[in-house]
Amino acid sequence: MQQDQVQALLDTFDRGYLSDQFAPVHEEVVAENLTVHGELPRELTGMFCRNSPNPQFEPLGRYHWFDGDGMIHGLHVENGKATYRNKWVRTRSFEHEGGVGAAQWPGILDPVRMDLPGGPIKNTSNTDLVYHAGKLLSLWWLGGDPYEISVPELDTVGVAEFGRRLDCGMSAHPKVDPRTGEMVFMDFSFFKPPFLQYGRVSAKGELISVVPIEIPAPRILHDLAITQNHTILLDLPLGWDPQAMRKGKRKIAFDDTTPSRFGIMPRDSDGTDVRWFECPPCYIYHTINAWEEGDEVVLIACRVDNPMPTGDWAGEVPRLYFLQLQPFLHKWRFNLVTGDVKEERLDDRPSEFPRMNDDLLGVPTRYSYNPRIASEPQLMFDGVIKYDTQSGTSEAYDYGAHRFGGEVVFAPRDTGESEDDGWLMTFVHDRRAGRSDFVVLDARDVSAGPVATVELPVRVPPGFHACWVPGPF
Image (cartoon, rainbow, N blue to C red; front, side, top):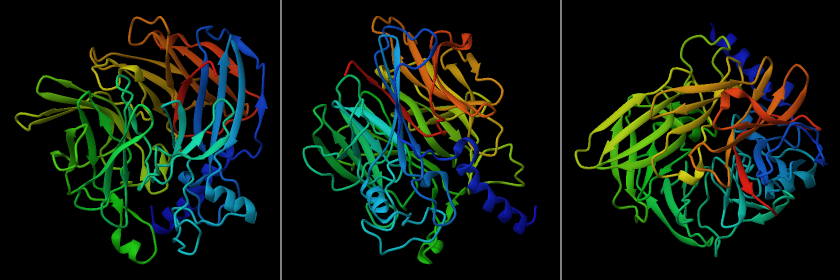
């Protein structure tokens, strides 16, 4: 494919995340007593919340899916009944653009502007949701201020504080220890040292510490992992091209000559005792779980061999403009005594946005629930795979022709006795019918299909990450 053909394809491709099922919605809706097919489990009391990119205004230039303003879609379940609502995350930049009546910040594909209030990069708060210390937090993949969201109303309370304001940002995917209630997080910077910072928040929601972590260069980082005693940080060779940045442009570069590094340190580390393990270059968007086995730390995650497009692209591998998405389930074993590393690929089906029973985060687990990547130009999931990482077996549920889901969230049964005794929940969109549903699966028997399907009154565009907030409220 010629370079001009590639560019023409990319120029139309980015608009694909603004059309069809990805087209933004502009109404904030509350709808009660929704139609349920099957039966919502009576034990299921709480709210499924999912964050999504949803631009308030027409983008200024090229559009990347990561650019959209945060919108949270929620499904409140109680006594077998369901209520849907959606609300924008009202960040400072969202309110500023609302006052002007038009987009002001360029997206990540366009040159930065230095004259905008709050800085050149817009905190859209569109990426992740975490429930900690009785508060729902909305987070952005590039860090920045976390925002507190009320439940079940989904109103934006304001910038979250942890006894005091953070001196850094909070990136997506902090981890909450289900035994101690402590939350660990990281923040990263492209522009000046420290390029990586590591923080902890107590079970009461008070900041314990933030410490710098030395890495050789700025990276685009996205996730971390915890065990009962350790934190695992990822130093992966993906970042902004420094020459392009000096020209005011943003271009992603992946260095396939630089090893990936996994930093293991005590959870209460001051940042000076990180032990780095080197592995072949790769990228990891999302970890699943990590735990300790004797002298080893075990990590399960979805690994991308090379996130940059290679060869001709015909649409069978999803793209996020300049990145391609071919992640596969992997396991690593890091020996803390010998320094040895073992890396193993567990499946040949591409999957991402993995989830687990969060009540067991940091200790040995068997199951991972991974949305299966569809052969589509944009990132879509045509089913969910339940992996048993101990036995090596799996089962799957297909959403059906023209139906695509998102990240699934596990809600445990109150009386559950096994790791998978609970429910999986997600939004599913029927592209042909132009309508969306909320789907509940029995996590013990995923392939059996939904125990309940809730008809939604509006189309719910695809989004990023979700969480389950236990009720009643």
